[in-house]
Length: 331
Length: 254
Image (cartoon, each protein chain N blue to C red):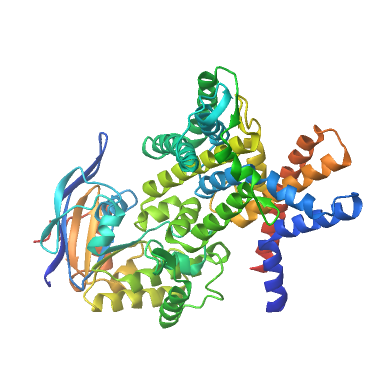
């Protein structure tokens, strides 16, 4: 095999999920009437912003060799905190700040802080007390959702303050600002993972924690930061979710965790840690969103989505194994 | 013997009721190569981990360059100038050769105040280091998982030669190497020692110890069973020390 085909093949393997996305979009555009429209594509990006942001945090922790099952509940708690303070009906307290724009940074900081704190709690128990991340974050997944029910009393908050809502309404080149926030997050965190020592260390910790410890990398510190980031990013996802629904309900975001897992796995992140990139995860998120949109347009019952997502995760894992065999032949 | 670099004074390590090290005392001079020999379970690897900051001793003290020394983590040992090559390789196979070479010591440049990896500078350094050691690896950008055992070990060895420091600990560094690579590895050790760096090498192969070491220290059941200059002993005498048939030349070094 000459070097050029080899390079081309490696490029395709590295970006396989993007090619899958392209393929799916082309097929849908050909076979589904009305699919090929700018509005539809904008909608795919828009609908994936909350899931996308949440997937970033989950991917960071998984790449570092751990697990965070609590992201969905953390997003819900952040959304509920924002909803209770800044919604004017339901259980909303309708807090007003002057000038009005001040509500934006305050609500955002609140959401990030709620998420960051729970992330720090998870991280401390996993890293310092050396408990299994799966169990700790499963516990958080349950008690944080419980907390949402407790503080809301099972009721909902509606009519988010217009100053905050503005991010969901104001559009820039056809996309609402919330979608741009998600895209910006992907760009920033992709750069952090690929270009900074912190990102490099997370990948190496996921690959061989003992080796990084022996090399003098501060493993515990890096891992705790990863958990705090995952929590804070989930908080941001919650903030976006509150804007999107103009409030918060007690069961807000239920099921997002499994979609985030699907997106992360489809995006090429290995659950064993150390493998995967964030642009791939974004492609995974867009792929799920593109399929959801197709199901809607074809008028299939929405229940089909879950079947298809499940099969897609299976396909992604099989594809990953297949990729490994090809790579071994290349090397 | 030249000026002592590291002195171990009655270092012990207990795991619960088990005494892995019952009191080890010996010293390593600058530019000296010490071969640490002993049967399986004699406590060699435990000793290396204590010096390298992976384990804390139960009692005893160490002097490094004349000063009281105790590394609580590998990072502290590294900062003091102690490099370690472990028996089970310390490579991250999911990243490339360059990333492994610079693990924890990446070259960065500031972009808007944020440290950004300087891949080109790092690649140039690795290329030079590997070339001068005669190690051939097809692409520095291949992930280490695709490399052979010998190539992986070569990366580790080149890494310690490059970073140097003041003291190098090698725990069975040649386990996966071929004959020619082993010879080159032994040359590397002599070359490193000639720069005034102290070297401790653990090995099972008597021939290697006699090829490279200035002094041979034998550990048996957690104590120093022998501490002799290479040119004053023979492989047979050392084997007797390891198996415990004789305690000739035993006792801690002064």
